[in-house]
Image (cartoon, rainbow, N blue to C red; front, side, top):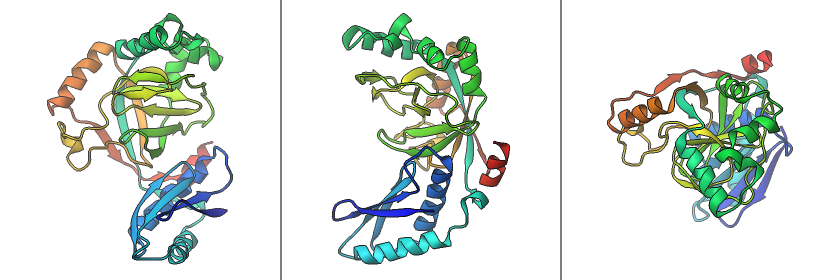
Length: 281
């Protein structure tokens, strides 16, 4: 595995793995290396944030030198087994989704009315644009592909705990251009696609992903539901998401139960075997 170390200011080192390509095996290595680094942090280590094929390491220069940090990182990398033999800690999280719901349609309509009417806003929805871009026969074919895949969380960020996920069935099976320019408002819980990536918006925010529907809260700093008791973030790097379809009125009821702490999220601890995954491709 090719590893590059880049200075990023006085307190950070950016570690990059492999070449600039969409290869999930690079991210599997990132998840494993990050676990190794946090389990055995060097002196002066502050925190580390994963990207798709990179890790940004924050260190305290008053407690260590950059050279000492790089030596420690090199030792961490040497301890990692071959990617194909990795078994990664992972959880399977099942989330309800209501496709083409009224909240995401409102976001599309607001965009078309106030920013730009574009091909992807025709009919007040992004669904038909995604269908056309992927040469699918109809909306149900798109929904089947979303529901029929597990979505690997490569990293989180931008908004609090926003998961960037990629299909484990075929990373480039679905792909769609993003908004241009960016949308000013996206509802919390919206599910969108940009390129081959699927993301869930944890808070109301701007966004450029094409919207396909809405799910339950994945971020809650006030911990209304017990699932957020230990952390306000539901999803972490290395988790797998699956979606099951519900109608919008069902989702509305589920979201109410979440806030009343009467809904139990479906989360299963299931280590992820890279060899098993590669064997299925």
